[in-house]
Image (tube, rainbow, N blue to C red; front, top):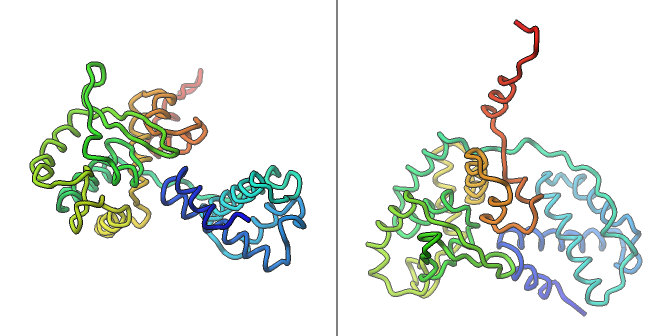
Length: 289
C-alpha cells in the first residue's frame, strides 16, 4: 500500500519545496477530513473534493492556502489511483466551487529598489543570492542549489545560468549586464571557497544555502520595509511582470520561468494601479470634450 512518505518523495521530485510542503499539508488535511467523516477512498462520494473544499473554508483557512490544499488532496487521490487504489469515479474531475481571493500584491519599482538596497547589506553568499532573484526569476530552491559550474557562456546567449527546475527540466536564463557586475563582485568572495555549490552554506561549504535561510533574510528585509507579504517568490513575480511591462511576449516569459503551461505564467503577470490608470487614460471617445 502506498504511503504518505512515498507521496512526499514523489512531490519533492516534481515540485518546488514550498509547493511540495503545501500539497503535503493538503494531503494530510484530506486524510483528516476523511477520518472525521468516516470515509474511505473507496466509499467516498464523487463530490468528495467539493465537500473537502467546503470543510477547509469552514475551518477558516485562507483562500490561497485552501486552493493549494485542495490541489494537494486532488493530486494525492490521482496518485493513489495510478497505484491501484480504488477511488470514486470522477471525484477529482468535479468542478471546484469558486474560492474568493484578494487582489494580488504587486512589487512596485520603488519597492524593488528598496529591497535591492537592503539586500546589499547582507553578507555573502546571501547578498548575491537575494540580488539574483528579481534579475533571473529563479525559484528560491533553484537558486540555492545552483552548482558552481551553472554559469555558462555561448556565442548567441553570452553568459547564462543553466537551471534544472521541477522534474529536472532544463532551461537557460541569460545574465544581463547588471547581474554580471553583481556576479563579478561575488567572485572575489566565491573563489576563496572550495564547494560544489555556487552559494555554499557559511557553516558547511559542502552543503548549499538553504531556502529557509534565504526566507529568514527576506523576513528581515520585509520588516524594515513594513511589507509583511514580501517573500522570495514575489521576486519571481516581479521578474515576470518587469518582462511583461517591457514588451516581452508571454511565450518567452513562460520559457524563462520554466512553466509547463502559459496559464500558470499568466498568474505571474500582475497589473499595477499605474498600468490601469494609463490604460483608461488612453480611451478617447468621439465627441467627448
